[in-house]
Length: 353
Image 1: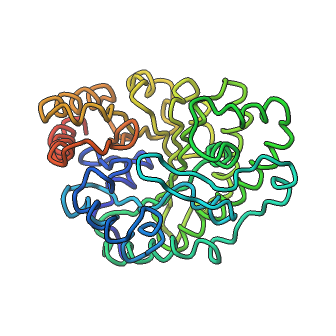
Image 2 (image 1 turned 90 degrees about the vertical axis):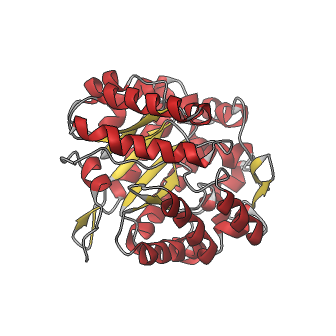
Image 3 (image 1 turned 60 degrees about the horizontal axis):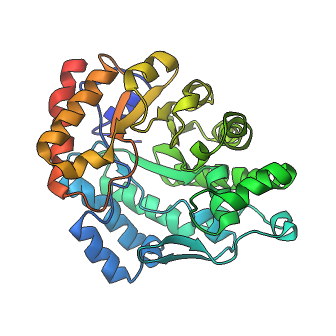
């Protein structure tokens, strides 16, 4: 296989020396970009965009045409798995995702099966192949999935929630039933990520968006243990190249040590975490990814540069840091401030290497 022209991200994830700190941004292809909005309008809806490999490839590449990013991340959604299971995914403007057939009855949960990614999620794999081809090995492509617990939250609630009352009630009253659902999601996520790796994803990330809503014991039992099993089931190499993995639990800063011991190569941290303390806590075990507050971005270029400087200083000297936001970029962010972020990381980080 041809070597990547820019493999800084891969090397940082594997804690190898790099000349500077690589940077990519969660939700880097999104509504803050006018060109993304134009393509989405052409597609007709978010889902039509995600399910059209040509258009999904186009939006995956848009931020790289604008900014000197060190990676592309596949344009898709974490709820492709429940959609492939027949739960009926829809997106309403301004409301976020909904599943038309949430899992409220035991019989529906018992008959759930992990979808064959080739059969039910082929459009995602086609996008991965097209993006890899279009990138011409310039930068790596990141594939991803939702964590088994985060998927279960949407599958039981039917949408996002302020308190996840329905799924948490199941967790405490019928843990056996929730464990069954998580088992199925675990098999589905593992097969899906492996299919993305086969199709050309060079890094994979597990997004545990709602694991941080759990208590400490519940997080370990219902979220982290299943992510660990996904990580254990992943292809570690493809065509002789190592495929690093990133685990990110939003609001999971209390459990960094356990995350670092999960088998992942990198742990994502949000902006509530002190990066210097996080580095001390995880030691040499994993790379750290993060952790600028996305709310800094609309505040202007000076604030962005100061924020970047503070994050880099907090991590300090040496390898094993990937610069990112602590969550996805907001749709209200001026693109020129994202450009300022990327430029500041590339300009200020070499002093730490």
